[in-house]
Length: 361
Image 1 (cartoon, rainbow, N blue to C red):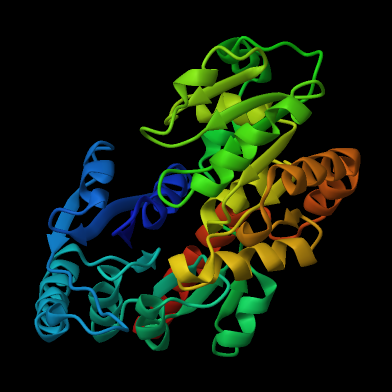
Image 2 (cartoon, helix red, strand yellow):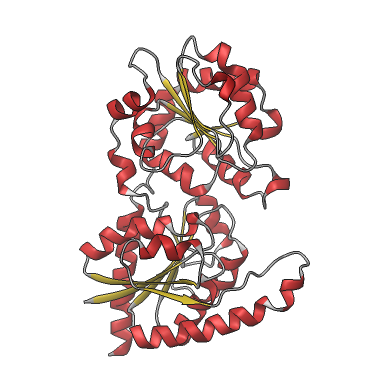
């Protein structure tokens, strides 16, 4: 049996693509183990799946001054030796890394153990963790064509992002039923998130008088952000958070309004959902969402609406424009070549395993 170690953590975005890969890896004959931090979000998500989990020391390397910058490098070094010990025990044939700072010592340890490591970079430009790991990588998968310009020649593979298969099997009727909606009007799904989504939530609610005569609206507004004053507004429903219901709500949606996190927008792409992207502004992030959204707009997948331009009027205008031209967006998404990330990545893992076996002979 082939053996693979998955790694990545710090946020759910560094874990869910690994989880999406697991069924295909198992089907292809891989025995899966996972290396993450001692107590990060990844531990809970992976242990729920009964996948063997190994925790290592993890430190964050920051671009700004922080007292922890003096101690965290020692945590990374400790994590490297812990990862090396685990890899020597598990003897995997290949590593797959989804990023986050916990993945850096794992990828470096893999190189020292002569185990090929495949890295996935979600955003347009590599984050600091992946920048540190890239020189040790066998291949680097990425979501955006432009990313290849920032990667070593011969290592870049345009794969797209692994998508949770349950998102592809949502039921439109169940989604409509959950919201008390019907098929008479198109449905807009707004996924504003929690932190930093105030501008989206406010614009959507101000635009309700203009939008509701023509659309039904599902608004995932973030924990604690439900507006009780409009809770019973016909054709408009609010959720503070959704999990298992998301696949059915996406199936019900004719158009999505969202931030521009790479995993989310790749899900819209896989589902061929016309979308309006309102990326986090540069002051609230390293600017990766702005670049992600610009790439999707350039490829004809999305309508980009910068947060500083968001008003009820601009949002209503964007909704009407995207809905009227929805078939153009759908056709662009259907013609996308990097739409089968799971198969591409599993095949890369197989290629790496075969290459390693040849070198051993």
